[in-house]
Image 1 (spheres, one colour):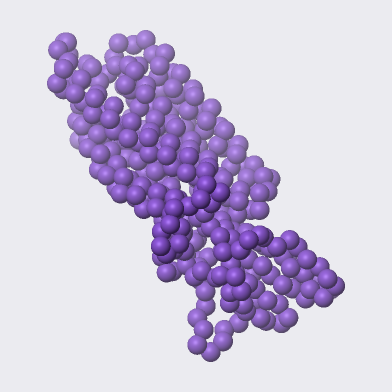
Image 2 (spheres, rainbow, N blue to C red):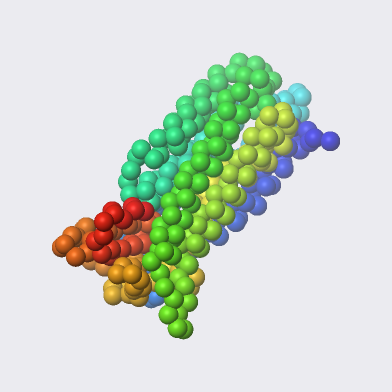
Length: 348
């Protein structure tokens, strides 16, 4: 039996508080990686801080905390201070009230920022080539348009009794959640495909020596991106399903999805930092190299070198640089040294 409107509202706030607690814990670890560096955890200099990622992280935190706060205020108004007729259900049915509209705005901001960061990561991994991201960008701006229309429709409702499942709102919210789910699947797939291709090229040039194990850091990056992307996309998809089913469960699912956006953002930063987990091997300066058939690979993190080498061609070999974003402050640089032959080496 589906919950009533009052039950769904209370469930929604309970689930949001639970997920916010998880999100709050991850914020501490994320802030450490964004603001500190090195085994001694020294504070980063301003030039070492990724300001875009930091500003997005702060915005996500403020919006998430704001939504929890006004959710509590809404419960107090409905169950403690409301004295009008119809009880709690009457007050909760005022979907065009400022609290409900503000919570929708918070939901929209989180989703837009989360999708923007995902597209930005994909843009960096694809060497800043926008053409690859055209389908994702079309979906992204379509989602932004649906979000604006959703807020407009909700704020302009004149019915005295209407909920988030109102026929005036559902078409826009359903479209928004559907577009967001598809866009996340597409962009995450592009991101994983690119990193997998780089890993495959590395495997072609890598040979094992006695006592040496294969480096699989990029495969672990793929797993981190896939796990976080799947968790967030699943929450968005489930929210879309309950919305289509016209169920009051939209409240707990939508509230949890709002916090899940920040959790996915933080987890990727935490788990893709080499200093955070030994699973990512740090190659410093003249790090390990692997030779095979006249080709050499060197792997180094950008934070350990002063500048990125440009492509070099001296007639004997070519140096190609591939940069893969693996975190908020480290770019994994992959330099391939290929001897000239009759065919142009395939670009990663």
